Length: 247
Length: 225
Image 1 (cartoon, rainbow over the protein chains, first blue to last red):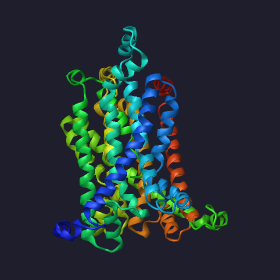
Image 2: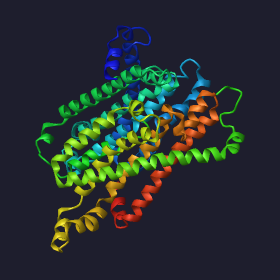
Image 3: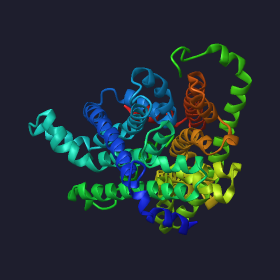
Image 4: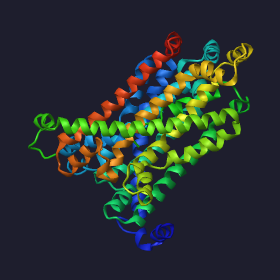
């Protein structure tokens, strides 16, 4: 089994053409990056605003909770019939996959941006205000740097989930690495199937590892050296709290 | 999904209510079995961690690696081993709940204030009595938070199971058949019911938590604001 999979992966024929690993990898990464970037553009400013002002927190939590309950597969197929009527060219593959991945990525980014900024010590914010800092300066100069590890934690969850879930795009005719899984099952080719498993899992672990590293780098040294604080674990909760349905 | 048919064909729905009901039940039971099994395993693992902290890193690390593997890939990987049996569906679904549940159960017990624990000891409670009557009730909010996540995500994942084999049924089968036949109504029945099921499960668990922790309501309302 393992030997077959390795042989499949090593076969030069599988490294070229429209069904080759490089093409599928690019498709997979492209749609993932696009979805995460759009999700960031929507959720980061919103989360930062809610965290800073405290306005609309209940709404944000509810939206994130509902978003979490919607399986990606459901989003994919709900969008499909509509986008197909709207644009037959990309309505069958790109639009449903992209929409589902964006919907998947928004809640963890939103919840962590909100929670990260909300958790910043209010005394700190008050003293920044007392020093005469403007609201915008407080957000970018005090709250964001302190909240950064939690915020990046949300992006990490979103990115890993999107990379893992983008495989579902293959169900609706999109390419990506999921192609090998779907085709492997359909054609009963176990080596193709397992090569797909290895590639997707490997990519997801790579993204997870890269973000873990980034998160450590971005933690302000002042926070890193303060030792085990009793509420550290609670600060990690938003990551857990945003782990989502229907990958 | 051709243009001449409406997106939702109500006659089809009315004629197939039995089928819809049956598959919804299938869907729910697969999710339920997995979450219950996952909770049992996670609770045991969490107790292990509470006895010996050094176990936390390896356990959550291993569960984290499992969690990162895409569901479609894990289901597919099990086919040569367990065939197209229920186990092929339940094993990955159960494994996916572990990370969320272990983390939340441990965090729940950790959130019990040390003074409360000491007071229980001072009252002469045995370790088991302290766990059952003091720590467990206080840990419930975080444990239920974990259960909500696990349940909701499992209900979503059951949809993916259908891609592996038709005999698992569930609401995913409507979607699969709907796509194959270009029949939007089937797709929507499967997709919307699964969303509804997930939201409903979430609401039920919130109610359960409120029922189990009447004292926490006032505190929770303050914390949200």
